[in-house]
Length: 326
Image (cartoon, rainbow, N blue to C red; front, top):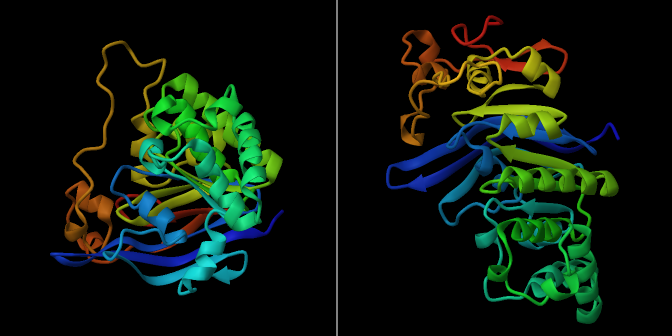
């Protein structure tokens, strides 16, 4: 169980635009151990979803292109493999829970047909057996009356039920790796807790590794073993979850943690925020991109900070102005 299911090395992903080729993921590296959950956290526009979609090569085409690096899954580099190999891996060995269940599901196909597809394609089941297994899957993810729901269309289900269907599709073949791209977005807190509990239960039963992408540090604290903090298309801090919350080293990580409302905060107090916004892809500097956001000046804007290990398995982008471990 100590082996790494996924190793990402210096991943670089870009998009061809009217302004030229713009890099969205800039030299990202991290690992996903077997049976563990790795959380990727950061604001919108930091490269979290693009990193995830680069793993399974589901980037928008023809604009999206992987320009460098390695994505080593179970010992094999997926960059440059043929389409047939990818078809055999996606949905079978790597499951994806997409961000928006209403757009992830086909609105004109019954739930059972969408669940059966992977079983027929990857497991060679007959349509009858795949349909019966689809009923079992819906029951497994906690959907009531699964024998009825399997014959319904996505618009007939609630948001929480649709999210459960998307999870069922992702785990239908018991994959070694599940990529969950903000699986609790737009769900109320009760349903959110149910979805997270379901993911943990399925992970325990199947022994899958999970990449969990979220904005919510509460979700990270509850479900993850390790955390990757991304900003500006780069990893600025990476550590076991306890270290991130007890001893954050990068100014961006501290800013994210400080912005969480706390019970001891006096009523009607202004919530802490990180000033300004994430720069656009065409505006990113070569150096420290958080310094760019904070409108700092100096050499830190010109040279990319080195990623340093400041404690066991705790790595930080060592910008002199953003961390004391420079």
